[in-house]
Image 1 (cartoon, rainbow, N blue to C red):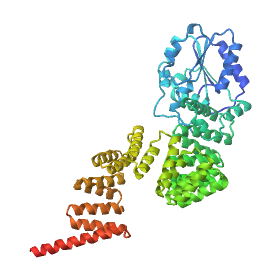
Image 2 (cartoon, one colour):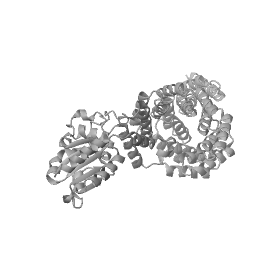
Image 3 (cartoon, one colour):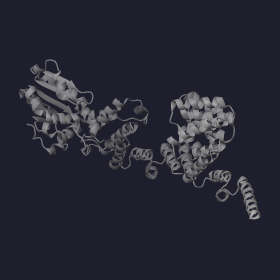
Length: 553
């Protein structure tokens, strides 16, 4: 006999599979006409149950309906089944694919993952159409579903579910459970998951959700499965549910270093760097000999502006794994931030001996060489990056800027134009193109490019500063002054903007205001001789003007 179907059936109760099968067989043997059965089992077991049941009940005409993706109207699909009027039993699998979008993963089979804000269309349809199913189809429905889908049906399709004729549960045996768990253990970080199609990742997520509901899972195994589910969701950029997976894995198994690592990774992706750093520090108390942990800690410290500490973290990663090209590249980037360009180049060179086809290393190396004024070498390095990634707009942008500094203006312009074809909204590309057009004497076009760039990024102080300079060359002084004022609003400590503002005010004959701007520029950068020299000239003009005024009076 099967138990009454009530809410407490959602709690896992261990059953004997052989006895459960015998009860299901007797029930299906006796049933005539419409019936509604729910069988909780794994996808693998569902195939075994159907095959065995067809062999055991040869007198029953059976059909199988596999639902490989989300559906909205089960009634219409069943109506299209050939010879459905001759059926006694219809086995249905794959119902869970219509529920996945409405489940919040990461709760480890606790049953708290149902989205109560919306109802899956299929379940709404089942609730409304239950009498129609009974009155139209004169055969027994057997839904073979994972436990999480069964819980979902109880909570979100109660009208349909209340008509159930029976509920059966087939927990995985230890050997099958072990095999299924092992099939979801991946050692290659994200690479394998990134190579999957969205549909394949979706199915793996569902597979893990089903396994997490197995009551005999050890805490360690449950935590490991949550980590894998979190990785799948992270690759799909579902950061909220990914984070929940990793956090719950860490709660279940506090020493699971991968759970802590990936929690830090997602927090960093979400821009929550202080929390991420706390997680990496926690991780290193569990496992301090993992180069990836030290490397990611360095990345987080760099985001927090703690550049020297980031370098120390990268040093630890490299001490553990000297051929870690990621840590080597990241260390080079941190050295670049400190203006230690020669050291950065040395690190990029080492990274390229480890991984010669690494675009990032050629790109960063080019920037460092450019800063050192070694333009031909910088161009050669960015060309290598471009060979590896010919359609990267940022590489083309940097290449154009280097060519511009080399005076090869037409080639530079071609690079910027190619970059804008790839990314028409690249404000940095438009800004660099404007500088180049100005060098070519095409100032009006340069201003138009800057106007486009500032629509895309109105907080770009460098673009506002360039706009002010270019407008000054065509004697649009009021607009030029407006641009310099925008720079100062965005970056009050920009001494060059204060200086440019002073020059513009002087040209407008607003001498006292110009003097105040010079004073600001000098206060911010007292070592710049040009500011002092111009201020002396301005003071001389002010004195001369005052003397002339007194003579006139």
